[in-house]
Image 1 (cartoon, rainbow, N blue to C red):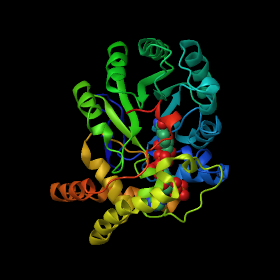
Image 2: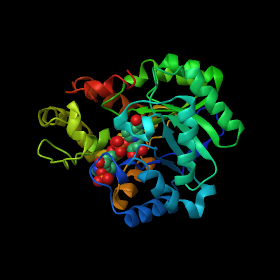
Image 3: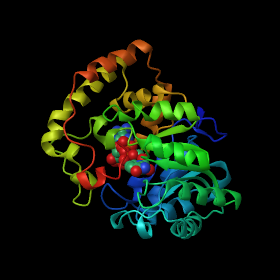
Length: 327
Ligand SMILES: NC(=O)c1ccc[n+]([C@@H]2O[C@H](COP(=O)([O-])OP(=O)(O)OC[C@H]3O[C@@H](n4cnc5c(N)ncnc54)[C@H](OP(=O)(O)O)[C@@H]3O)[C@@H](O)[C@H]2O)c1
């Protein structure tokens, strides 16, 4: 398995991680626990050492799942989790008060069946709590041996700098894929300057870029994608242009859309570690195949040029969630 280091840190992980959210939360009902345990253990056997969860996935269910599944090889894997929502519930709004972080971590440690969290992200910047206070709390937790590395998610450049001045940030996790490239503008230069790694979430565009979703796809009524403007049926129809672009490249190379989308992501910087999510072993294997696909400079400019001619329809979040997401 190829590995990568997150920025200038000593945190070395498999070059592709595994996003675990969809196993318990977000994309319809939670999947069967035993099946997901078996999937997680297969992922480890196939060389994945970087697993992504959050207190609010479930809430709590996803951390419990990882705690059980990864226990036999806990010291061989890197577990990343997140805090920052009131009572750990993303529907209840933000809460990064130091007293909540301290409560939150105790719950996460217990559910994850561990005494230390390898990478602890603030899930969203909380406008009511100075980021210096958040970073200071994590600094204390690192000194107490409960956290190894500090991360932020969807934070802007200024927040990253302010937090990093108090406690060095190892990784930023934000959305990044061929259909959401805004981090390239201000975030990438900041991360490069400060030596911070980047962990793209939704690198497959929440599944859309894989060509397995079109305007006729019916999501479960509890699926979060029903609320995203970019996934409105009309937008999906328009946005197929993007999928077709990837499909053409995939067909020329005898690979799949998902593999092109992930190889593109990996090719952008050596300190990028995408975390595609899946609940299916055959897709996990397919996604790992992206590590063997090297896109040349000519391939990348061909993709850039073709993509620049396509306008994506629909914002990535509804307005109330856009307010707390990175710009
Ligand atoms: N920090 C944050 O705010 C934040 C936000 C969102 C996500 N995340 C993290 O990032 C991880 C990944 O993001 P994501 O799950 O939103 O999106 P993603 O990885 O872009 O896409 C996941 C979706 O793609 C499907 N899929 C995966 N591989 C496929 C393949 N080869 N062919 C066809 N379909 C495929 C999955 O369905 P199946 O399960 O049916 O395969 C799932 O519906 C999450 O699990 C979570 O850990 C973090």
